[in-house]
Image (cartoon, rainbow, N blue to C red; front, side):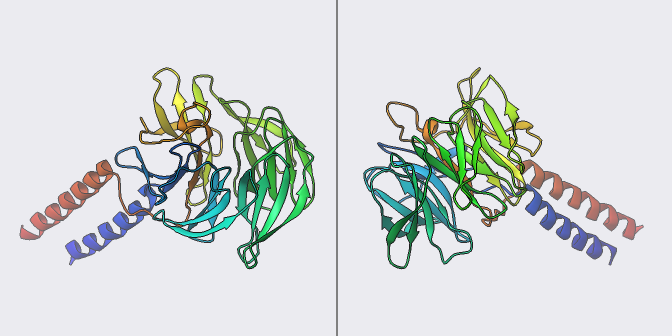
Length: 316
């Protein structure tokens, strides 16, 4: 009976550990020739292209749409907003005017989509029922770029080659320093953007700007928040080794290596490597079920030893 109870306890512990050690589901888009949608294989560190298009894409943004879809904006070529299933198959495509960039699902709507126009520096709202777009905000920026949803429900758009961010509803402008390669948000009202490739700036709830992370030995290309684990992930090059790695950041700005030597990405704009303008997302409801191999071995070994010990005691 004790052995049975121990087995039940061990099973419960393994189930809990599975959730704790589950790998995140990370998707990446790249730009221009041979650009596309990729999923990162956590076992092999290989970025595997999963979109089924034969044509190349110029994806400039990637975000979650609904509970289990991906939303990507294509700047050129297809000139569209594309909604993908988790396996990379296309669910829906909406044509837009040339140079659509940042895109995000409008909060508390029926799936309508905000997207930014690059050169016009406006924010458009796409009505998915009619397929028509209307201008909801003229930013006054030189160029518009990435978008992020703050936890207070307001969407912000960042300026390309500039220092500003603007709330779409309120029109509130926040100034920082450095141009926005990415714009991200956590669940606590904070925004995050880069200042060059080796600094992440944090815009607090009161819109004050501080340095969240800095490392001159690292070239960081994107940032994605994992709502389930309350951490960030980013693709970055280690300048000392030249390797493209996946790093994890906690909410205090501490960085740790998560996966080394990421390979498989294709694309790249204007002769740059594909990761330079890549965009990344952790699909927060996509629950992985794989425990890292060392953890599996340790759990199985402990369970086996425990059951054997109890078995021997019962024979005495």
